[in-house]
Amino acid sequence: MSALHQTQPTSAGEQARALWISTTAFTICFAVWTIFSIIGVRIKDELGLSEAEFGLLIGMPILTGSLVRIFLGIWTSRYGGRLVYTLTMLAAALATFLLAYATTYPQMLLAGLGVGLAGGSFAVGVAYVSPFFPPEKQGTALGIFGAGNVGAAVTKFLAPFVLVAFGWQAVGEIWAVVLLLTAIVFWFSTEDDPQFRARRETRQPRKSFLKEFEPLKNVQVWRFSLYYFFAFGGFVALALWLPRYLVGVYGFSIETAGMIAAAYSIPGSIFRAYGGALSDKIGARKIMYAMFAVSAVATAILSVPAGGAMPIIVTPVVFVAVTFVLGFVMSLGKAAVYKHIPAYYPSHVGAVGGVVGMMGGLGGFVLPIAFGYLKDVTGLWSSCFMLLFVIVAASMIWMNASIRQIKRRAGEGMPAGAIAQ
Image (cartoon, rainbow, N blue to C red):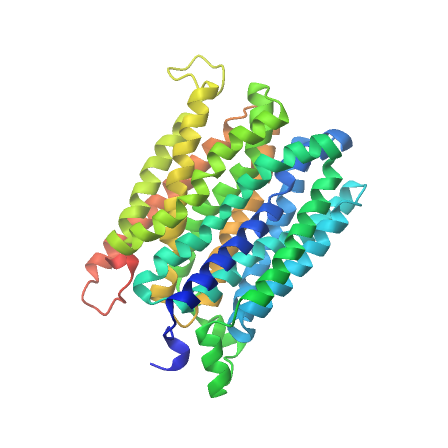
């Protein structure tokens, strides 16, 4: 196996530094990426936006952050994560600062596209962090890195108070400055990953772009993408939508709604590290089955229309409790999906991780728009959870059919990986 296709030996200090600095940077990036979840509510009131227009606004950063992931993942493999990560943060910081000076809806949509670059940092981080660790530890490492999703909760906790005290423009300016400082610290405190150093030292030629995309012909990649569309895309969509949902359904203030929504965001983020460790220990297949089963029950409960004559009354307490459980199992599932990628595609982590991340991010873009559209059409706030239930059911059926097929083909050279354990 060539130097390009294996994890190079690294010290524990190098591993820890790469992991924790990258995770901190991703946390800040994610806080910026979800900034519209709070300031979007105030902008909606100021501009008189419909629910669908609001969904498009909060989804614009998610769109950019999704589409650029595949290219950022490949560029990380070609030019190194240290450079690509830093440049990504600098570009996102500039766009976030300019957002504070947008005054019209089109200007805010355009600024949102630039803010979305912060979300592309996930593909960079996955391709950068994974080479520092051997295969048996990559699930845990990527789970810890992915816990940077907690940045959504950081925004929900802090942004409402900044917004009320100084206005939504101040949120954009402060978040931009913090991201700029993070980029500077990252550049001066990290080093290139082992695979990139090996390529540079041996002067091995870069693969062509077509070669980078070769694994995408495998339907397995798109199956993983559907899983991540729900586990991550559903998480992002709800992280963005919940403050508006809580205000609309239960009449909470934006400050209270932000705090309650964080009860969903926090377990959906920090327990991702636990999901990675479990995937290393017992295999990702069991984690995925558990996530889909629990998510199906949770989304079915939350699909009950508020105030309807139903056997289950979804009170605020019930809502928070069930969303907490949903966020927890989603966090495990997000880690389990990414356990597969370095196991099945060790030479194409950037491309495959970028595509899977792109599809997950697209879920975070498409779903808020769909939530707003369904609310406008049906008048039911709970219609968003009805849609999520359908996605969960489709994912579970496809996974179960694929696992049965894999078992029938056992012994025919299937690669060792998390899902085969």
